[in-house]
Image (cartoon, rainbow, N blue to C red; front, side, top):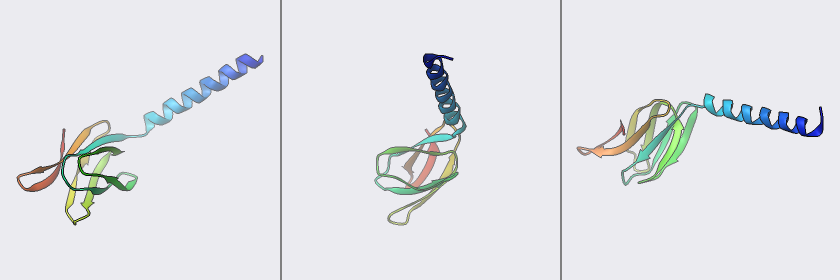
Length: 97
């Protein structure tokens, strides 16, 4: 193999490995529309922060969270789904967007 062929093969291997590794990683998007900041846990992710009126991504699965003032929240997020932390009837909930 000449130098260019080896370089092309190495690049294809790298691109393929990167593409398949990102497919295996399950993620969901979470949007916080409240005035509270939360520390969240889901799947293999723990102690991830989502500030007031911001969004982030987190592992899919059961989500549990606690705000700085002690408010608890929980819900579920499937792979590729977007969920929202919102205030509904005086309670804070996680619901599909």
